[in-house]
Length: 224
Image (tube, rainbow, N blue to C red; front, side, top):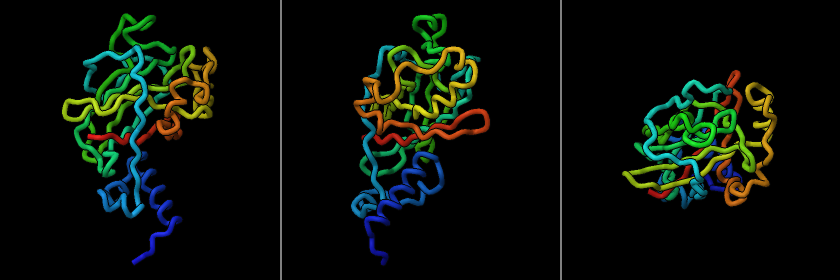
């Protein structure tokens, strides 16, 4: 039997995290349950709770595309929900997201008050714990780093409320395109954001370029 060294353990952990975030088949092949955790082969981390913020609207639509015709660079979100104790994917969780549009507006509030739906939606996770959304790269507004909000519901109960963040360098590149360029970059980098400093490093999306758009992924470890 192969001896589990620190190096091999870290290698396996890295492979698991990559699969959990990116949605590959490796998640299905990775060890699961207490045995996997005890062996050190995989490790799940409870996603930090972060404030809901003032812009939540209950009862959002069950849908994948949440753009409502608003302009912006296409962003595909891959949000995987896993059990933080066992690393097992959670099927049928309701993942509820909302964020600002490219102009920095939230639907239902301020300049976005005429609509209550853009950049808002709910998706159910599949057997791999994956919920997919089509949206736009979020805009910024004064005093906050670029982010989006998420709630996870399991069995009718909220098991996670948080915010996820984008790497500053990716945001800088994304904002060179219109309609972002006419506003300029955000006035708040991640490291200075009052919410990010309370756990944002563990709520950072892995973002990759996809043609003219982006794909952003994260695994959300929750307690059922």
